[in-house]
Structure formats: C-alpha cells, structure tokens
Length: 171
Image 1: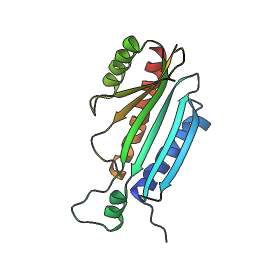
Image 2: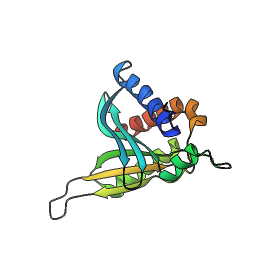
Image 3: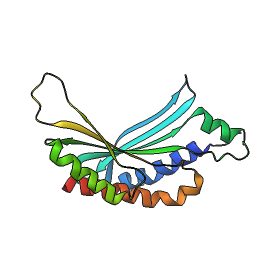
Image 4: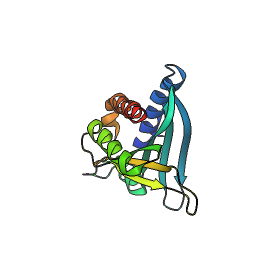
C-alpha cells in the first residue's frame, strides 16, 4: 500500500487549490505544470505556473522540491529529523528599464513577503540583438522547510501570491 510523502501531500494540496481558482473561480489561468523525478539524485520537483485571468503580463510559479535526504528522513522515520520540502516562488515578467523597474519590483515584493529573504532578480537578454526589453525572473525563497503542519497556511500563501501578481501588473 502506498503511503504518500510530505511532498505528495503538499503537491496535491497546491494543485487542488490552484486548479479550483482556475476552473471554478476563474481568477487565474494555469499556464504550466511540471512534475519531475530526477533519477540521478532521486529528488522530486513540482512546478505550477499561473497568471491572473484578467492580466497575464506576470506569471507566478510555485516550486516544491524534495531531495533524497528529505525523502529518506521521512520514509525511514529518522528521530530528531523534521522532514519537509523546499518551497520557492518565482515571478516572470518583462522589464524595459531595469534600473528603474527592478527596485520598484523589489519594494513591492518585500512589502508583501515580509522577510523570508530579499527577492532575487535575474535579468536575461539575447546577446548581439537590439534590446528593448529584458526577461526578469524574481525568486522569493523561504528560510525553512514546509510540511503538512503548514497545510492550513496554503490559502493565505496563495492569497499573497495573487496580491503579488496584482501589484506587479499594476506597477
């Protein structure tokens, strides 16, 4: 008999809530879904990307990860271990004037996500092309692992993501 891991339970909880926001409430549109097992390291990764239905300029993505150590600690029921997953959030958008827009983006996200850590922004562009815009990937990291004890916090977390999308699209 299959006993789901913390990773499986959190993945299903995120899927249920986000797909309800897409299919039932029609607040968001799911734009990507990746569920991977890395066979070389026996790690797992789940990513679910979405945009606001009325404004798709910014994409949010939830990334849930479990390493072999995370899974082993849980399956082997290691004493004094607190098995969990790593949760990271990404926001993808286009910027035209990084020197002006990136500090505003950082300020918006720092206000919404009272410090887990400073949002990290990575700009991409194609070399040797006339650049009019840059792809900005913003990562919000959390300083601790998540597990089923945080399950009741997921609706609040998703509300914060939606608030972030709204603030970033009106910026």
